[in-house]
Length: 87
Image (cartoon, rainbow, N blue to C red):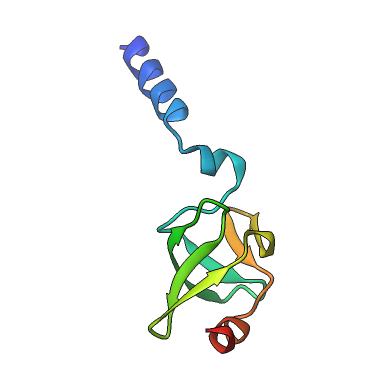
């Protein structure tokens, strides 16, 4: 029984997404502004790490350089207002 539990835990650790291990953002995760307010859910991530989400009915791109992982949350240095005006 202990072997089965151990193997299950080991499989979960090995199969954890690489992005979660490296801190890179992934589609389906919420993105927050530095003030802690939720901006939205990431729609997709491009090959260069740019996160895209739909904001006010428009596709908005957020550069990977502005995104950090902190306390299990993905945050951008941009505000929701910045992103809304850029779209």
